[in-house]
Length: 96
Image 1: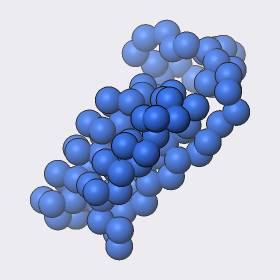
Image 2: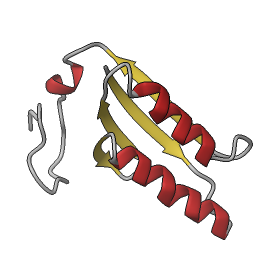
Image 3: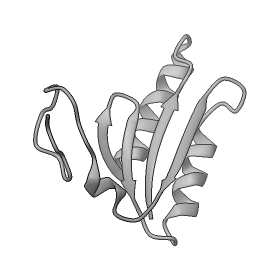
Image 4: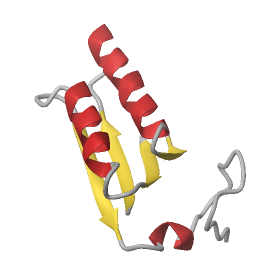
């Protein structure tokens, strides 16, 4: 299962800053960071409920926003990228 995961965590408080770090750590355990608050995640159907629950348990449901976009299998291999802001080659990159 492939997902594009984006998040916006309210960091105006020290608690929010901690939540942001925890959300990033959870996402790093399941996927690849492609932008500051964007991850490409490939996980099994068995892993998905745990991933979702960890995120849900971490965030503030009144101030934070996490979005999981379910992608068609193989989509992450067909990424088109514009620009040169990259640290290392990424799977599926097609630079223009």
